[in-house]
Length: 487
Image (tube, rainbow, N blue to C red; front, side, top):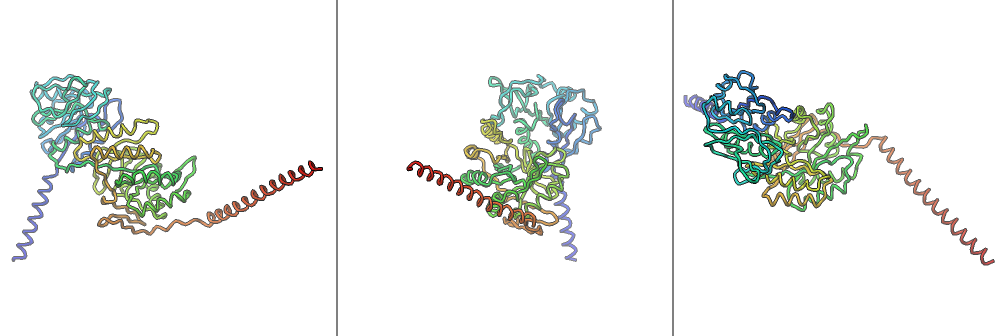
């Protein structure tokens, strides 16, 4: 009897825990007129759905022309007003029932009229703003970019935009309504929005500022001494970092392998045995999943075991699908850290260095400063292998001055697996189980190397003999000349 009572008690506790967990999962509904603004192809709605996974919420989405679900079942409704349009009365009636609503850009006047609010004036789109004021931060802003200005009579203004003379509300709150005059993840409005979502959703994330440094574009054409030089520049700063290795490159219709660059492989093997993380990169082509898998096996055959994967030139719609089958940790140009089921996506969000722009390092540091406004910021920087040593040092010192710590991917929960290979972090140690055959040169390659070696010896002998003969002839001619002169 006592045993049955214990079983029932445990069962009830499990039910209570399950229900409490379900209640804690926030639900967000995204309503959109279109995925992007008219005349643009940047899919803001798609990015928003991705970034909402940062907050551990359930996300639903619907077009504003479709029948809306019961909005009272959602903790937050986000309306993306990227088009100026006439909203239906049924739509306004349903959305007015929202527990909390975030309204972006257009058509707020129609909603205000429906709920009987005349507490603000719609000024429309305005340009010429140079900074966004948020909390104690001043974020840079392009004056050629618009902000939809609404002037509230009474509201809690959470952020302003400034033209250096005047300030105008950018984000304000009235009861359960939050209005944003712009949302674009390519500028500072995206940073402010993502930070405020913590408060709007009631999500409490720990506060930190971390830099993720990767040395990128290491491929079969990379000079081994150049790589050693750049690594020493980062090592001197005593920070964790990783490198991205592309095992194959196609050029002029020919495929080149790391094995074509023996000196580089030797350096990479030294890195593999150090405290530097190696990330696999694969240049995009058709049958991408097959290429990623074959590149992974190729690296393993050299004794190089990557812990993560970085995308390069991959179309937006095809991201994550293939690489996530093999790698738990992915790196891509997202703005914040996100999670898709088992897959962890770390952001490379500070842009890429442009060697033609001498001010590029300053621009990256400016973006790093703006990004401090996000309470749980991971700033991912891709440093190309050809960046000058001085710029690398200036970049890292600049991040330190801003207060950034640095993320070590070797300490993250990485896991890589295919049918021949497992690479994982087990209690802080890198564990590799591999059935991939070690790389060895074919008989033809070995024969060709021997042939080239013998040919080199013969060539040296021929050239040396030729030089000796020439010198002999020259000296003989000199002696004959001197004899004739005496006679």
